[in-house]
Length: 277
Ligand SMILES: C[S@@+](CC[C@H](N)C(=O)[O-])C[C@H]1O[C@@H](n2cnc3c(N)ncnc32)[C@H](O)[C@@H]1O
Image 1 (cartoon, rainbow, N blue to C red):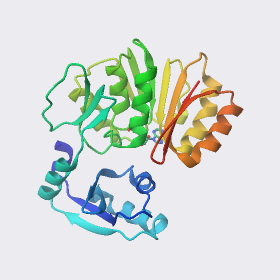
Image 2: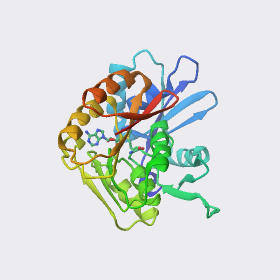
Image 3: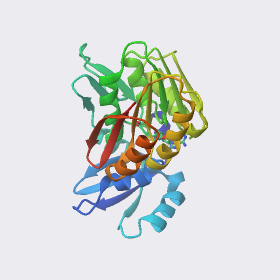
Image 4: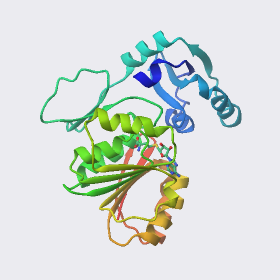
């Protein structure tokens, strides 16, 4: 937690009623979010104070109909609350995602991913991350070379290496994620067999991998698919997420136009994950 301990924070809270779509809000904020929690009938989103202007701009331009309460937070309260509310994530009793401060009582039949919740997206709490990890567990074979597009915290790269990948190339365009990515690799004792490129995934032309995972969003995925189609030399599977259920039609239409076959569709809440070849 060293990244966040020296900073000041603010929270946006909104009453949890049936008309609130948490995933929709999450999607608007995820780039700037430090964490979320549900407390006393409210959804609470936490941000670094340095992001107050951009978050207010999002509220004014895109979320006018929502009534958020904004609060500045003292570090001590925030830190404690955050730790108390951070849930351990269990993926099919095969993998647990655990925050860095938690003492693990290791069970040798289970893999563990340790995550420092930092500036990057990817604590494992989001449905899209979980959907991809579950699909990864089904598909990966020892020795696979994997391309992780929109790597964020590195959580999918770490999962891939834990599940037997021989190499992972991660691409992420947000420079702020780099420190958190490397921190998480170190925390998971991963010293080699990966590289992180800070770049736009749409500039990548090398698809000589056994499996591509892309947890990004509809627009980037719609731009990415023709690029994969153009540059791919071999057959491989792609796990796509960051997609809302509403995005299914348009993405599947493009996939079929490009001759990709949808092998499986999995859903969690409002979120969609497509396994494609
Ligand atoms: C939904 S998060 C996924 C993070 C992590 N892979 C996970 O599954 O939890 C999407 C990530 O993609 C990055 N991203 C979005 N558009 C991108 C682009 N065009 N090129 C590279 N990274 C991009 C964002 O900065 C963000 O870190």
